[in-house]
Length: 343
Image (tube, rainbow, N blue to C red; front, side, top):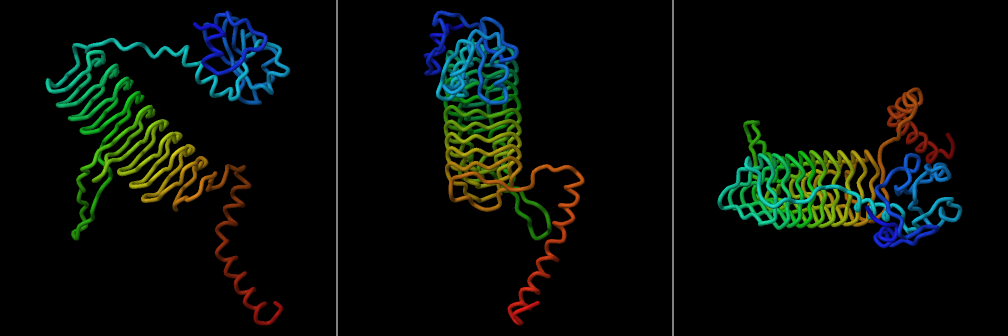
């Protein structure tokens, strides 16, 4: 619970038509909110619900507040304000110091007194678990790995040997950090030889890693995820990749080996990045795009075609297949014009 006064302070917002002492017990969408709950308006699509909401107050912009019939929490950026306020009502659970009886902890591991090691966790030799860290059920921490203070591994997270996580890292179920990169060499006999992956993974502070996301260790140097990076579910980060601070990558992004992603970048769902490329700071790549060359300037980039009705797509596809033939015919016509002055 929190009062509207406390909420306004957290959100760096002002109250309009509100009693600062009003107690809020939770948050809900505009069309479902009840008395005692806080709602929010961050997209014009939901504006029609504003007149009928039962919420005790609504987080919104100064523009939307002009004709808001309900008490309002007016913020410069309603989405950011909501993110900060919703954290007041999040029930992640407190860390209980100690370890579950089923946990397997090597005697040489260093465990902070106020950390929690959950059921069936494995903590291998010389691993370090920082202050206030939380290891949920079935997590595996490899030899010499380090888990920073107040980091939270929700469940079934695998941290391979030598990996280092910073402070306040959040890793969701099934994440694997430090698995071998896909390094292979083809010998004269046509057989693949595995190239030892001798580097590790370094993860900065305040990084979030989604469910079933994999981050491969470097072949020689470390794979690096800088501070504040947010990775969605089912992302593949290959060996020796570097992702710059405060970048955000949506689900199913795939980044090939040794690519460099700049700071404050955003990659939409399903984006593919080829190996050894560099993407500048402040780049946005829209969903399902394929990056096959380096991007040297900030801005928004796209590739591919958006969905169309099937009959129209069949026509487009047929015409695309004829592009090469049409190009050759056009080149011949241009040549004739240049030579004769007419077709």
